[in-house]
Structure formats: structure tokens, C-alpha cells
Length: 204
Image (cartoon, rainbow, N blue to C red; front, side):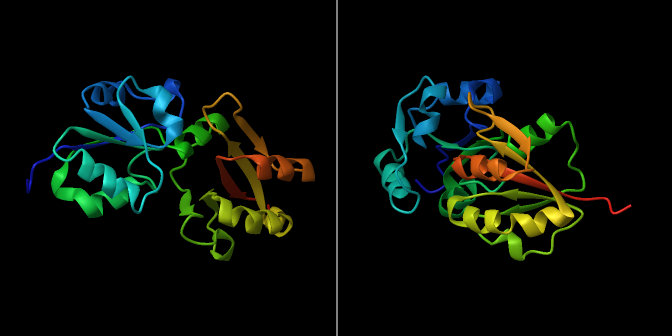
């Protein structure tokens, strides 16, 4: 089976059908099975298996459906801090196509009516963004293990930065707001899917 390409990586955007591309829908319908997080199951009209964990379950499912057309559904865009990177490393000879999608940062900046040509991007999944030397503008992805640290540092960060939050983007309970009060911090802490945009204040 070496070189037989049967794995398709399908970007599902932020989880809303409104931001799911036509290409993603079309490709999903052609698959024998889709593998991904349960929150994406309702987006597709195709057999769907929920991915329980990355390390073991993905390999188990790939072996189970080996040679069939497998669509691995990833969140956001496959090229931006994505599960796709792990799939590239493990299964590159078997990947037939990668379907790009709408990322969370694209959606946030559209909501803020701003461009992002000079914005730096960091992931809180792999490092503590508080320890980074932030550029003029920076974009930070949150995850559960780092959220408390970021919230604790908010008072210091807010001296130099305006901080905007995008919570549950594209979903029914979507919120985009600027952090100004303790209530905003509480709302951020309750959000499951959240990203932050730090914009350094103009001293002039």
C-alpha cells in the first residue's frame, strides 16, 4: 500500500456550516468515513466516527479503515496550528488532498474589521504566551491549561495592550468583545473556544 493515497484532510472552519467551504462539503460526501471531533459531526452528511484522542485513537481508526477513503476533519484551517501537522508527519505518503478552511483568526479579524498583515501569531497550546516578547500587535490562541495564567496576568498586560476576545466564533453563542472589566474576565474564563488579540496601545 506504499504510496496509495486515501487520506483527505478536511478543514471544518470554526464549527458553523455558514463558514464551511463548498469544497469541504463536496469532499466529505465522497468519503467512506469521516474522523474528527464530535462537534463537527452535524456539519456533514457522511459516516462519522468521533476521535476520542489524538495519540492512540487516530492510529487505531486509520488502521481500521485502511485503504478506504478517509476524511480526517480538523478545526479551523489545516495550515494554522492544526491537527493536520501531526497527520502530515505520520501519514504523508497516504495523503491525497488537503482542503483549506476558514481559521478562527480570520473570522475574529473580520469581526473586528481589521487586517492582520503585521500581526504575530502564537499558540498557547505549545508555549506560555505571557513569557513571549510580544510585537506591536499579536494574536494568541488560548487553551485550557494556559487560560488561568493569561487571566492572572491581564492587569499587567492591559497597561500596554488593548485586549480583544473572540469566544465560540461562528456558533450561536458567539461573543466578540474588548476586555475592560472583571466581568469580561469572568466571561472569558467561562468560554470553551476562545482566542485573544493583543494590540499595543499607542503611547502617542
